[in-house]
Image 1 (cartoon, one colour):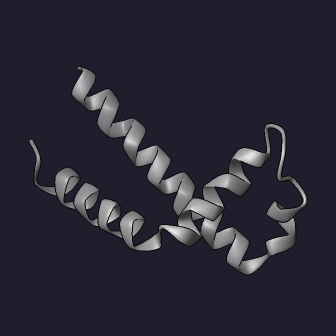
Image 2 (cartoon, rainbow, N blue to C red; image 1 turned 120 degrees about the vertical axis):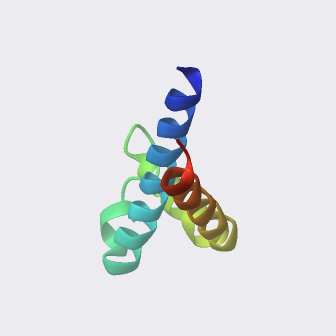
Amino acid sequence: MTNIVEESLLTVILLLICTCAYIRALAPSLLDKNKTGFLGIFWKCARIGERKSPYVACCCIIMAFTILFSE
């Protein structure tokens, strides 16, 4: 049961990082005005997606194979 929860949480986090980085690439003003507070989480996720993009991409590929080929 905990393995399913952990896998789902990692999937949600990876999707959040990728989505925020994509939104910031299209419209930077949406995320740049909220660097602090609760909405600052999205700005931080976008920065992680931009700066660590090779690692995020590898994690996405690994997660995709895990979801496709696991029981």
